[in-house]
Structure formats: structure tokens, C-alpha cells
Image 1 (cartoon, rainbow, N blue to C red):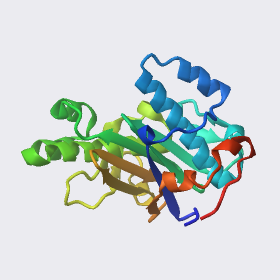
Image 2 (tube, rainbow, N blue to C red; image 1 turned 180 degrees about the horizontal axis):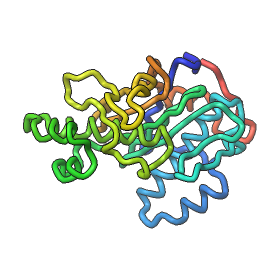
Image 3 (cartoon, helix red, strand yellow; image 1 turned 180 degrees about the vertical axis):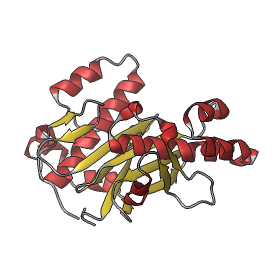
Image 4 (cartoon, helix red, strand yellow; image 1 turned 60 degrees about the horizontal axis):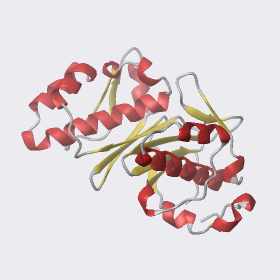
Length: 243
């Protein structure tokens, strides 16, 4: 299905199961060289190459020719283009989110990593969210925490203000039986209905996406299906294929 103003596409990618051609820019290659650990180099290289292939699918441009810049808070954007995108990764999984023209953010977290739930919740969650976390059943505390954390991170990344926007100044649903949504934004409570919030489990990972578009349809796409339609030997003569 093609991207339009009422949809968002989410592309989860297992970077350990593919070898993408190097289509990074000079700036990205410089960033790549700054990583010390091999696993971090692989994750950065594969996820950012994948991002270029995904963007090329929508822009009908070679992945090596795509240029994007960064806001003052580090959010990437395409110059003179309405297409919006965001990238997140955790361990071996990257996830890319794309919309035609709406602000979007995405976050992915490993559910099995050790986290001090109560400490982080007390520091970063609103009072109502922290209360829900404290009162959650022991067997539901982990998923309750990550529901809240990923949804908050996705929203912060969507608005593009980074951690300069306090996490406790807006609230999201987090309990397993609650609808997935933003319930309150401090100083702008009426704007909550402008947002679509989505969440998905992917094995041991939790994915959340936030889109500034009411009732946006979230569709998950198969990167392997996309990539197999391209000739690796013709990267410099790359053509997108619609499906």
C-alpha cells in the first residue's frame, strides 16, 4: 500500500540477517568511525543504510543521493520535502517510521533488559503514570513500564525537542487493558486529539510510534520484501519499485 496523508508506515529491520551495500554519506561514515565496539558499528551502518533505502522507495532517488539535515535538537529532516521520518534501534533491531507530511517519532526497546522501573518512573513519569506503575501487578510491571517509556519517547521524538521537553509534562496510557493514546499534554490539553499513538510487540522488543495526525492508520511493512526488489549491483542506478 502506498503512503498517503492518512497513513504511516513502520519498517522493523533485523540488521543481523542482511548485508546492505554501503550507501552512507561522508558525514555518516565519519560518525561510523567514531564507534568503538563492532556491534555498534554494525548497527549504525546497517540501520542508516536501511533508512536510505526506505527513503529512496518514497522519493524515487538513489539512496546515495539522499540528503537530510538535523534540527537544533538532532531530529533528522529532508530539506524542501514534506516526507517525515524517524529512526530508532535497540540491539539488533532497527525501526524506521515514515509519513507523507506529519510529525512522526518511533522508539524501540528490548523488553528483557534490566531496568530500575520504580527509579526511572519516579524520575520521568507524571504522578498519575508513576502511580499506575507502582500499582501494577508484579507480572505486568515490566510491560507497563515499557508501554509508557516507548510511547513517551516516540512522542518526544515526533515533536523534535529532545529531552528539553520534560517527560512528566504529558501523559500516555500504559496499562495492558487501556486504549493506546496520549491523554494529557500540559499547557496544550486540547492538542491530544491531534495525535495517533500506536504500540506493537515484536518478539522481545516493544515498538511505539507517535504521529501528529488524528486517526492515522499505522501499517507495518516488510523491509526484506522491499530490498529483494532491488539489484545490489546497481546501487548507483537505483530505481524504486512501487508495490
